[in-house]
Image 1 (cartoon, each protein chain N blue to C red):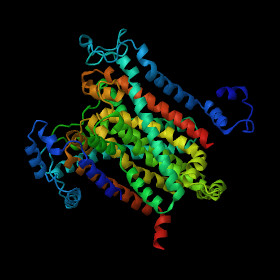
Image 2 (tube, rainbow over the protein chains, first blue to last red):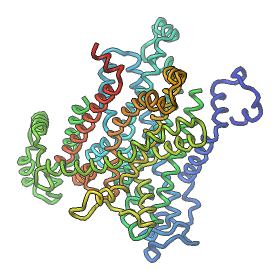
Image 3 (tube, helix red, strand yellow):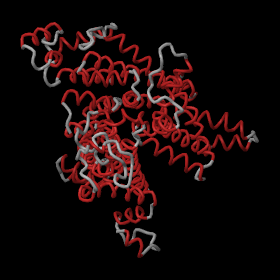
Length: 292
Length: 304
């Protein structure tokens, strides 16, 4: 899509292009968005194909060579079981890049549905649901997660459900405020006069018009979801061994850093940092492009 | 409302745990009669509503129950841990509030110049990084490589005030980073708005010195929203404490909850989380009061 912008950069108006192309052009011109995209694409690539080009098996123990500092053979050194840290960092992107997007998807679907209902019906339903959601939002995600995971047990799907549900009130609030202004417009009145069902009006008429704020909120939430998944894995409540997940690796190795084995945690920490910053740069770019 | 919801969630979380508490304490090999007897003596075989009422009413009276694991009243644990956490939070706040506001002010006075870009972008990236990631990097730099600061927040017994602070600097840094971005951003946008306003223009055109304009006209208005943000961040801070206290092995309320969650020690877990809820509500209330004290528009509006 960026080719359109490259060929006709002198066209300023939307007369010849649709709104979608317009947004894509403005995204392709944003440096921070492209930087973020490259970082995220790199990790997605590692998650999908990483196992085919890692020098070692990320799960293979090699006790004789445990805790070796970085060298030509092991670029990032080896951990306490002699596993190659470089291979583990590459493949470690997989679980977090599965769990965080699924959690975000769940949050978006649940939040959008709640937001459409509360914004469209208003009244008592809206009041009650909104109050409950507000109260819910005041509770830190880590606390909700601790409670839920203790009650439900640790698994990837628990993490997805916990993060998805904790984030849905925030998306619901965004969608609700967008729906509140949409429902006063003529096309909604027209749909109501045509005696369309409430469900039809909400999901077919209004939903397409509130996509931009949903998209912005979703990309922002994805950044927070990665934050939360990494944190929960670090706490031992998320992704479980023997996955080479970054947060998990840090949690099993940080007890040894006083001994100077910095390579067992530093690269995982930098990997998380780069992914989080990458996603946030993308989110920032999407926000800028859609709000113009 | 939040407190009520939280108490119900906490209580339900305690009830739907898989496997029963007696079984969890006595282990899988224990006799079923022993498990039943323990559950009975802990009062866990009564109807849910009775248990909830019993729990919440004694909590209000200050009786937080008895820890399943330590076999001792919960309250001293929670109060000690809360005190420790407050020390840590205080160190973080004392560092971040002045610096965050200062950062925001500097950024606002230099809008779109390089220094503004550095503060805004740096603040934003710092805010989105998980605390344990920045914590690990700080431990490596200041603790392992430079040997400037201790890497575990466990000071020797009877350590003096300054020694304690010395041990708390490193744990406070990750919290500092996350909060700095938020506070600086709010202070920046508040400043920019105030600088753009008519009253600032009037003050400048009156011929008031620049310093007086900034101090008396701009800052007072610019910092109001920042105060609200600082208060709402206590909610975040509590989540952050769980992580940071675990990472630095600090005996605060966060690590208390964490340990209780791992050991399925529900009285401690429930009391800890409810206490956090109360702290959060109090912080929000204080912020509301402070906001109306500092903002004459709300104060005078209420009097009329």
